[in-house]
Image (cartoon, rainbow, N blue to C red):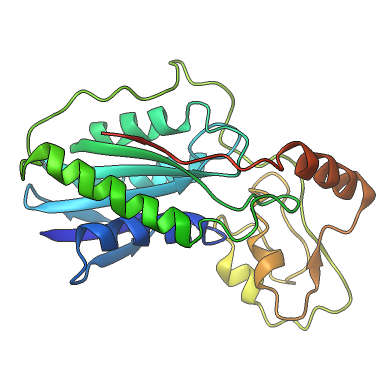
Length: 252
């Protein structure tokens, strides 16, 4: 079984989910295709299996991720899809990902809505964790047992969501700031999924920014931040409301 983990993962949660599912499918090893910082063409046949993993942004697949997935083609290729979301709700995002990969020629054999640490506040810190990885392994084992080795035949999956999809898969307007601690290393600009950070490494195009906070989490000097009361008060309230642990959901 030739397995590829394909992910859009600005802060690592969707990557961890993809690798966990791929490892359960192919303990002997698998390939990776990272579309976080740009489109990467991929072409897969019926003998391949692809694990797709993207985050949920405002209940949707991020628009930029949806666009990059159009460069990936399947030819009756079986796949598993997963959405990583921050403990609120995944709304229509899993259904949207299902529709996207089907249009690209993939046969969806299973789907997962997986909880990960939210970008904002202190919500489900550390997730996906070891417990989530164990659940992913059980899900893959049950899926393979149910299919009895047949991953080529289409299956009907009851995936939550509605069409037309609600909302937009864009940033929510929290654009990181830059302090005087910036050393002009340029790491933030090189890692930005949408190239929203200017050549001065300080200015950020708010119309392009995803509010993914990848620059904040990756800045070695701690210069990128959101230390403003409008965000901090929102994050405190959001963290309080989403404190209770939600469980992963699987469909196969």
